Amino acid sequence: MALGGSGARRYAEALFDIASAEKALPAYRASLDRLRDVFTPAVVRSLRDPRRPLQQRRAALAAATKDEPRAVRAVLDLLIVRDRLALMPDIARAFGELLDRREGIVKAKVTTPVELERTQQGDLVRRLERASGKKIQATFAVDPALIGGAKVQIGDRLIDASLRAQLGALARQLAS
Image (cartoon, rainbow, N blue to C red; front, side, top):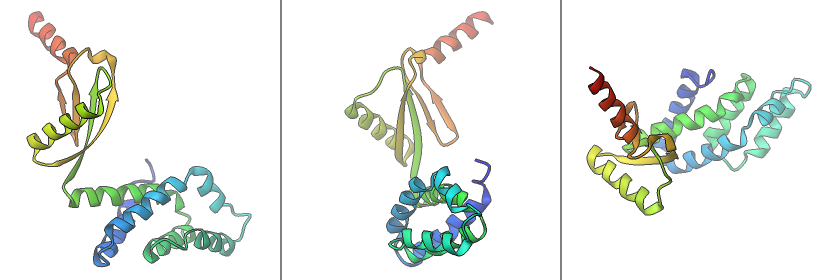
């Protein structure tokens, strides 16, 4: 994520301020999420192609994004002029993080040894929300090496309640 540092964050913060003032945060998020998926490396390469005049590339981008919010179109135009279109996916991600933080949503990654059913996932998310006092947006992964239990990563905090971790702790305790 070499390009995704403070530059993307600054653009995202500017868009966030504008969207807040316009009371249009959900519309901006939807727009940026759509654009994040559209701005693949191939699309960015074609919009950066120096064989086509800049005005022609700007016109193509403007036509393709005519239904997006005015401020988003203005940022896209600025990015194409400054040859920084590759930042677009990172700007969208940063905007989403800002909105999630404002709404008190925390991302969590839950890893279990077997795939959980939807109801089990929902129950686990509700328990995590009660324990943390925050709204949790969870993604789920499977790692059979855990044997049993689960690992939960919430922000920078890791809760490892897997059988593998418990066996490792027991082995260290017996070895000492």
